[in-house]
Amino acid sequence: MRPLPVDEFETGLSLRPLVDRYSRITARQSTYSVPARFIGHRLRALLRADELVVFHGRQVVARHERSTVKGSTTVVLDHYLEILARKPGALPGSAALAQARKAGVFTAEHEAFWAGARRAHGDATGTRELVEVLLLHRHLSHANVIAGLAGATAVGAVRADVVAVEARRIADTRTNQQSDTLPRIPQRRGQPDPTAPGRPGCGDRRTTTRPAPVAHRDRL
Image 1 (cartoon, rainbow, N blue to C red):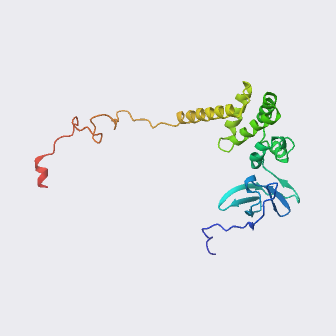
Image 2: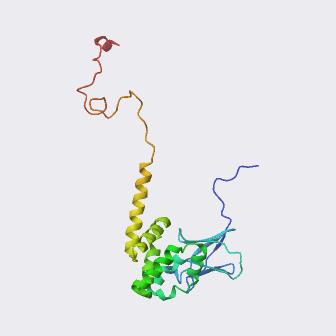
Image 3: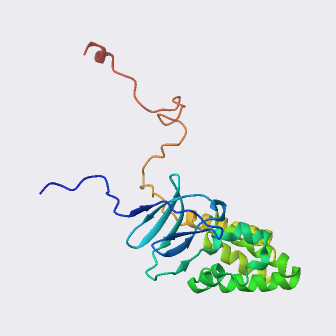
């Protein structure tokens, strides 16, 4: 038998679905969300055995686990954040929020911050603060944002900018702790320090102890 080819062979079904006004595409009688900025666009999708991958050009803009239920709808809360920032009243009853809670992405820390923000700033402004926090997940790790939420809520500073500052502080602290735990190369006992002044290769050869060349070597 001949060896397998080096290049991988794509086995997924290629589709060109149109994004509807709800920021969803249809693939094999199931609907999936994509970022809201692509409403009205026709995107390229690969329907594989276990996932659906959606592309805009060569960029992956959405990735979903393939649904096996006919007529099902799979949505991601992150895909609607720009819309929810303008229409915060649509968040409480949205299917995206319900699925995020079920998946464990929308945590108890999010719930506590949201409740505190609505008490402090009102429903609309408090929900906008939550949306701003959810946008932090795009460029900060989930764990750091959750820690930032817990810290901000604990002191009653239920604002997105406070969460951002706290999350970045925690990220820097964890990075420094990891760098401190990196193994260091031990120096052998009696081994000369290559960076010490006066050693060859350090730019100062005046104190070197290397003997002068013997005269008869020039005749070799």
